[in-house]
Length: 115
Length: 110
Image 1: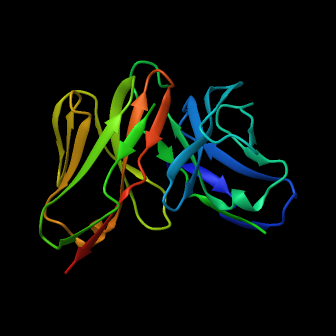
Image 2: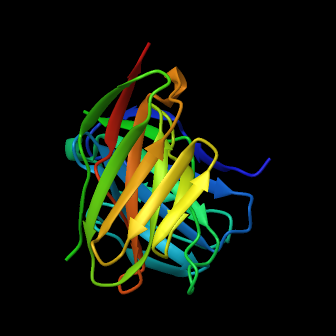
């Protein structure tokens, strides 16, 4: 089954404790992206990757890191989480952007709480 | 800059028709998407418009007017399961980003 998977689905952690949220897709998509979703603010892009070893900042990259060493995986790293990073996080993937824009497939989401 | 506006909430009756509007401002328009998102779940793709006009897909249709910076999603024969948030998103080829609106929460009543 074609899908985007994220782990963990739920996480409660404390301020300053490094964490990684994994994202993996099995559709051979070049483009991958991380979003956070907060009430009243909608989906905001954190980082995106056009292909392996290529990553770029989205609209809200502060406090986050990403890597794209393999095509299928795009982990999101919070080196020192803070309470304002409490949010619902989505990973998404799509075929290469290029001239034609393709729909994004979203993972099930990771609900993160930082106390 | 980029800006997307859509109503925060709408209500409708089962079996009825509802139109959800979206207006946008972007310097490098490269297509508009509509996504459906049930509470606590991931967004799922509904439609894509890049040229002016109406795209029909079953009970759902989406319209685009690039000159007006306007789109709407039309849902016909509403069902209870259509209660969800509907997200308008615009692709910008200058920034290569997909910018989402804050979503319209639709409640369908019996």
